[in-house]
Image (cartoon, rainbow, N blue to C red; front, side):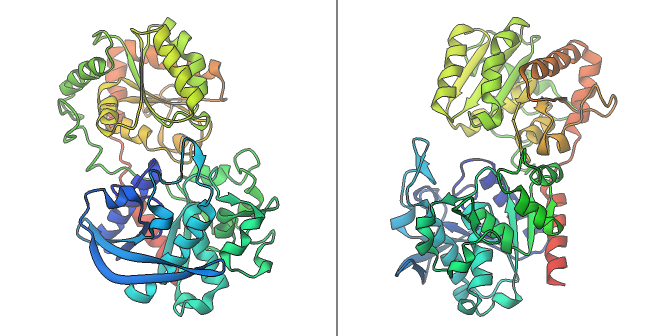
Length: 476
């Protein structure tokens, strides 16, 4: 695998968690997995025990050669992780940019990463499958096809591209073309060109042997102009190679029965510890203790894609119906400020923490009664699946992976696990919240709803089995 993120070495969101969990789940199924990562500053300072391999890869970037030292470590017992240390590209405070501004050389950084990841095979041996994630690694299938003479093993290798979020494409000026060292014919509508620019993700879509997204519904959505982010035509053209495989949950990490970040453990059979978690959550956000009043949680990037503008708009009406809400995340400065203003307006009902805080995110899942995910679009989403296991009922926009994982309790009585709304409008969102609050007030119905939610199984083993079947079909 080649990816820009992998927990616990480097992550900015769900990508890092997904790559890590998938690698471990595949290894449990007997698949020999190695992962290649950029040697970010945070990765080298993650506390992992890295071994110096003594290997150095040198690859062409524009008219010069650039080098990386290769370090090695393990994730669990079966997964080898290689880190490409090239301080000129990766020794920086953040992964992709600072202050909501991308690094100006991101095209060069990830051209180098893709070339270097392929060259690593000279030392570790030829892979049968190269599985790459998102735009940062999407040039790997392109280079395999276009520069097969550089890689003696390329003809026998098959490539898989997983799109975690189509909105992020690796879109760069045409003037950066020299960095790729590719023939000019690859700057075309059926290769890397999109709207007059270089598009790394489109290159992967055009050349990968198989394309996956992280939920079945999202795989269909991105073939439409509404969700295709300008690449819907390219995806429709390769629809025979496209499928959705739902991401999973690492229940070793996200399990209220064993979660070390919770003040009290609980499970589906004995949920008394959840009330203690709720009190701890109220204290963490300096909210008055009110165990019988509903408390909603949000753990999210504070950006419009996640519907945080819709949430900020709806907060006065949510407060008016007696709901309390705690919000954790970082994102767009204007949205951070709007949410802080809402906290100042409703200090006894709204708590906001602008931060990345892993322990607090677990406490929100464990202590809240409801979990809000009003995303405009959501390729898969993980928090709604965490919430189900923690008995925290999700209220979600009916899109992408949220549609695939949350059944509406009113539309499907006896089977529902949460509440969905559509269209993406404030009135529809408020309507779903009010339906959830009505269920909360009916204690028998609420207990049945929580029990169904906690018994859902979205383990990575199921997802890994589908990926293994895909690999085997490509090799056949």
